[in-house]
Image 1: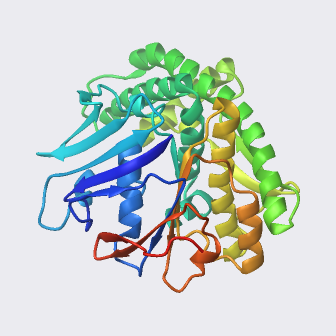
Image 2: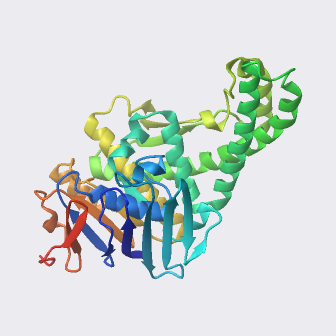
Image 3: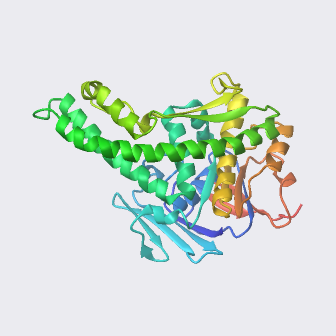
Length: 367
């Protein structure tokens, strides 16, 4: 599967035009602020109907505009067109001209993995960001996990609303009878998530640790999953024991929404003590491992979006990373003009110069 073209309208600073992208490797060359990342973001927006840079869709509109759209055509796929529109504050997704009822329908059409600066949050950010990454990794190849995650989040939202209303004295009487009925569902869906997370984390860690060793030379790096409960019985026991604290706080204090993932080296926490360069490499290889796991589980290759990921690596690490690149059907890279991007190009690489949101084909694409 590859994106054969992208058309945008009022998307960030990109020109309102269609751009041909039908090559296995596509290079975007330009100074910062010219639209390279915006182009990758538009592709990602078509793949998932969301951005990898913001949770507010309205921020994707060009300055002075309220509505925008992005549309991709896809080669080697029965679903050969995806259009995502944002109009009058609402988002709509169309697959081959038909409105999609659920965004999860996109997951099997254009699996896309982005490597970007924001990925540092998975290493140095909050536990919530690491949970988000591993939930995304599982959801890419396990639609049942995604459904269980949605069900859990619905129960969690109901439970937290009940607890918050009680804590704020908006609720007459005690919420305990409702919690007695709700908590078995909370425990059941939560335990399903934890079981899959535990297995997936161990499998992911095996792939990730080998990648980190090959690129950095440091062995013994792994991912540890620290879960809140040890089975449904333990979940129900903890929920009963912590109910008073939950009611006082106005939210659920234990469960898979509080689980943690830790990067460890020979049994000791690693990310907090790692150098900036090591943390950047952790983030980069998290995405590489995510792509490899997707291919292992589905037999398919994703599209890769690599936003300046080679810029901050020295020559040797850059060479090693390229040698362990995950399999892909198509890859988009962004480079600054002074980078030696032609060194990495191939005979059929498509190279665009990006300036003020416009992409111009480089005259000489063969090195």
